[in-house]
Amino acid sequence: MSAEPLRISGPVHGTPDVRRVAWGSTAGAVIESYDFIGFGTAAALYFGPAFFPNASPIVGTLSAFATLGVGFIARPLGGVIGGHLGDRIGRKPVLVASLIVMGLATFAIGLLPTYAQVGVLAPALLVTVRIIQGIAYGAEWGGAILMTYEHAPWLRKGAYTGIVQAGFPIGLLLANLVFLGSVALPGDWAWRVPFLASLLLVIIGLIVRSKVPESPVFEDVRDSGEIVKSPIVEVIRDDWRNLLRGIGLRIAETAGYAVAITYMISYLKSEKLATSGETILSLCIASAIGIFATIGWGRLTDLVGRRPVYIWVCLFSATWAIPMFLLVNTGSVLAIIATVVISYGISQNALAGSQGAWFPELFQAKTRSSGASLAYQISAMISGFTPFVTTLLFLALGWMGPALLFLAYSVLGLIAALLTRETFGKRERREALRRSAENDDPRPAAAH
Figure 1 (cartoon, rainbow, N blue to C red):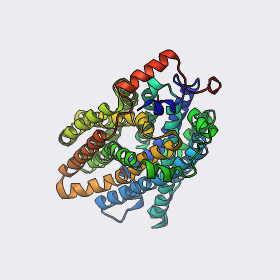
Figure 2: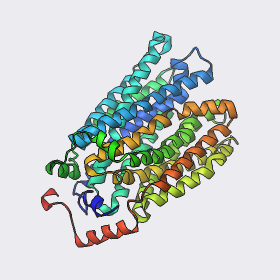
Figure 3: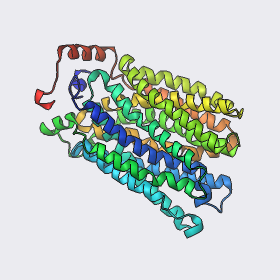
Figure 4: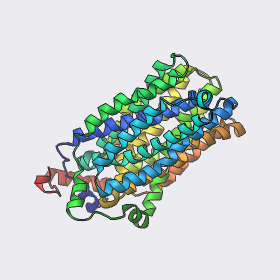
């Protein structure tokens, strides 16, 4: 990262609102993750019998995972919409709108009729609401990350964006705690209650986000007249290489998660290696640890750079692919918990913690929302159907099939990291330290 990208990254010491912005962005990220990830847990444990009851257990699981994947397909569309609006009208409006849409869609899932009640209309409604969820989730990430990144001080952008990225494990923890508490409820209430309960979280999130100020970098772009008419077109035309690199980096994290966590939930159940309660407990422990791990990994990128963290973690994940399944196959609860914690705390959290600062730094300020959002969300199309593909691989190759797929995703991430430039290496850190010591702020004092 040269001095120019540093200059457009906001005030050297950050804004006085940075903590409020970070926690406001995180609050929304928690809620959106709760809503989106809760669907994955429900798909693995409940949606097969509820919405596809005439199929065999394995076909029902495949159908539920296919519905899960539909939401991921819709995420790039959300990324396009959110990225375009984020570059055109600002980051904050996108944050508020995406949260409202996601909240209403998730609440609606809790009210959906089952196949036993309305027949084929039930899965059709489930797919429709899932698409709306995907669009909202796709629009949300770019706004939340960029608001925090552009308010944060140069030397702590990884740490602050790591807080927002930690919204994912917090949302995962909340979702699974609610599912753990509702597992004893009769009938469909075991999965309806977690979705209905999200409405309260949405109300709280909207209150918090309404008080968050607009990004100083977007205000600079707007005031200088550099607003781009078609930011999506410009970023695809001029920055397509960084888009491809970002997609590769993201696939290693999100698709790897789809194998190691989303599919693993179903695998543990279908192979009778753990009860639903034990599986959810493992996820809760991993999520609780993951909150601090994600923030810590983000902070580490401020100290050693974004690229080294990604390279070493992808190397670890590649070697972890087969031992991960060997451990859970023992059926030991402690081994299962340890496996889930390691898979999540290292293979997912470290990559997510690195992405928060690395992705925005790959793109210019005037197209940053579109570029970062597209790179982040396009990979979702692959990760969304990974549990479906993983189930087919298991049918053909046993547990070795999913293990090899996880290995392939890790290698893809490693290659992408090697091909992507470092944006906060030694030279950039020295420059940031110098300017910080000199109080060399590229923005006018009034902007603070």
